[in-house]
Length: 252
Length: 208
Image 1 (cartoon, one colour):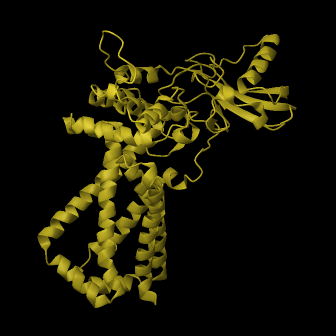
Image 2: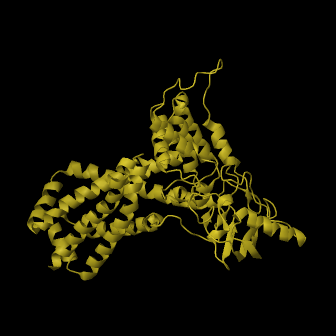
């Protein structure tokens, strides 16, 4: 695909701090190479803003190679932008046309307070993990490799769930701001593997309870989370969590 | 305590919706089966009604259970709707769905409330009337094209509600497996269309 330069109009949510009332600001950006990533485009904007002496747009980012789950924004109504199974940093400007207007909003949920501009506080997800996302490991010598047999299909399924990078796009895209895909993936990952069995029921109870306490919404099976998840995690893991939670509630 | 804790949780409420919805779906099956006697003749339908109402204990228990399940399904649905609206906080400027066909899931609360309106009309017009002459009641009711139109619109809304409801119920029960998902996807169309056709055909019987 040949590289071209495009001109964009950006409407970005600007909010000074967590207490301030934010609003949208419009910026014009010209000469954006289509080879740039979305975050590189924001870097160009921030250089421009800095030169003008105004406050650059705050946004989260870390690895910029699609594996850390740090970058997060809603582009024209879709979390992580229009490309499926892509994080924002891996979204490239070639997917946009010259003259496009991009509305850039932070992930919105009552459980994700905004720190500044597009930077949100996702520690509510950390607290769900703290409630039960661990396994007991005996101290002593290192166990031999492959000493615990796990069927290949099960290992693959657990790995699918474990690929969650905790970006929060599921919450952002859910019409109810539910964190079910995140929690479902985390519960599934450990309940599928033999190492996760000792705490299996406690974990399901503790993580769902922690999720409810954070003020996330309820799941009504809208499937939006699965559609925007940059790791393509299936709602099959939510179905598994539903089973796990019932088993833990009544047969613990 | 265990039960209260379960049903207060987000997943517990999902299970309430799915279980009550499943019960209502079974009721719909029995209702369709009973009404299907109309395809034979009005006297047979009257005979079916007389037979049914000759067991007052069964009627008393089932109608009360049915009423309670309806109330549970509606109240939980409204609570979910209100709670979920609050969970977002500030809304998005651009509201867009990534899922292609989400009309049914998006409108569950509205289709549900329309069905409630239909049920109020239907029970007032038919169920609370004299069961000894129910055959006459319905043949009189369905002589009006406006009534037929209202009934058919309601059945379409019901089919839309079931399109998401049926699949959603299975997902909540944890039934989601690549091996069965094609079958389930087909059933999400077959089940609603089945009820739409059978009930619409019955309401149209009297003008032909």
